[in-house]
Length: 529
Picture 1 (cartoon, rainbow, N blue to C red):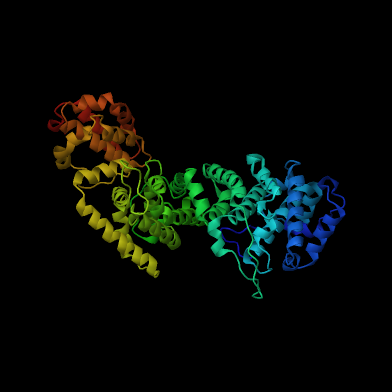
Picture 2 (spheres, rainbow, N blue to C red):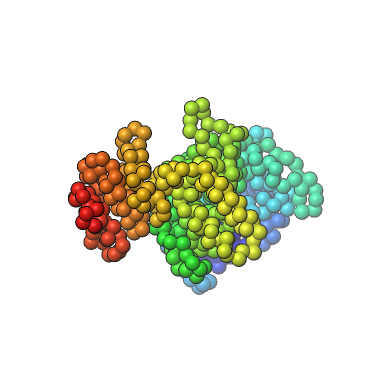
């Protein structure tokens, strides 16, 4: 079986599975019938065991019982294993921690059941096994999987990944949108009887699973949750639930961290791209996270809430995707990042407009943010690369055209304002003496609260030396060209944040910081510069 994003990896102790002896494991409280079923399942192909819905249901419930009994005993030596063991090592683990091995065994077999049922090859479906009665209610035994997840840091990485993945596949099968992809015939072409499944019975468990996935995305390494995240992306109901729980911003934050949080200059060659940020994390993980974001962009036109989530100041989505395109770690990452950006750039509020009086969020809003984040520079670079994928070529051309058209409609002040608010400062015509002579007064804002100046001051703390240097320059030019600008900058704390930068290791940042302090301290700075 291929190990894609929604596949379960091989257990570190898989070589011990054939050696499990059920009779001595009295703490599992297995009946003679259950033990016989486990042995029969080991000797027959899985398709044979699942050919009858009653046998399939009983087998699945026995495995869930194993999980409930074995996982409740706490964690042993198996939970600490992260690499595949030799047969001798696996047998040693079985002797020392039999219940740990049983937990891995049960999850492996449960995943195999669900994968086989999902194809419909045996004539039995996931719904027929895990949803019971005439109303198709979710079986109570699913809670054994949630208990494994609730162990948190005390749990076993393989078990948590497997439990979350199995639970996700079971619950998503109940989503109404999945009816279109539910198998209707077995491998021989015989029709599979449609079965009622109660989505209502799966909603609360689905909310609990989504909350667990979000909790993992908040961690430095969310690898445990990525297979389940992909499963949640497969139905519109679970996508909406994920978005409603704040999931979009957490994926974007992971991409910012994994892709490298500091924005470097655009690489001049693919090899430089790999060196600049691509090495910070697994390229596969970047791809999987970006893929999930791209999947979510297909809900943009159907929900103003999701558009707001993508465009919110906390979301960082456009910036994260722009960074991925800029550093170009692998072509497949660039492909999904560009596809997501294109969907953002072309989305509309015509089908699902926001409430009356609310700000309009559509493709133009995202295009302005893309310009502010420096996507145009990255697109210009990509246009020079020789891609063989026609989708990438088309996305690059489309985004370039839309960005150029949107740029022409924006004033220089709008371009500058969006750039500052995005936090992606780049040297250009908006960071010149001439620009501030004309626009310094605009920094006071419509409410007179100097919001944009406060953002500039906060960017002095940026870990990106170029951004901090540009912030120093802009603050200095504001001080020069705005009446009483020196006093305002001091009152907002600019001087205290700039002073330490005078001793920064980066010579260019050091120079701009010194000039900024001079402009704040000296009234007629131009005479001493």
